Image (tube, rainbow, N blue to C red):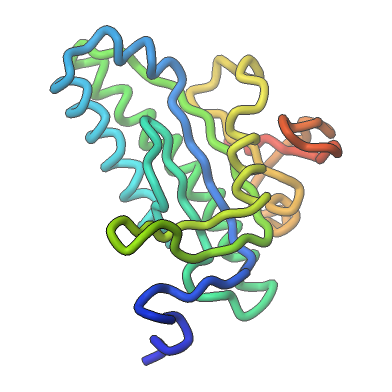
Length: 210
């Protein structure tokens, strides 16, 4: 019914909107991959990806891409949100998704250890802000994606100080713009003002608690 608003020349029309980006990454995946044969590695990775992708979709997000063992998901696309209330809803859904991912990893770890496989840990970064959404590539290979500083910040939150809270099964770090939109509905603690890699100014970041 609204295709003219979203399509131009058969492609999704590029537009700027505000959304929440989630990046996840497994700790120690490279070492694990070196110790497994190809088929076992793919079977194990697909089991993990299936559980995490379903969790994203159950919380209203879109899995944008897989990058090795990493997942990039977006909450708030493709339709622009009508106002701040809907943007805040996306942010909360994204953080609740991260918490649910933690629960899924704990469940998977129990299954894996009973089958003689190693338990895994993961990191998650979440940031809310403006970004560009559209398609990149050629007619032969087209990819729907989001680009912009918001994406970069979410990725930097995931990879921030890999020794910080290294004992946790799943460390979740969020930015102040995301935390502000939670309105206290999810418990967090301040990590402080930090300088993320590639950024010129410090920003306040927070860790999501159980």
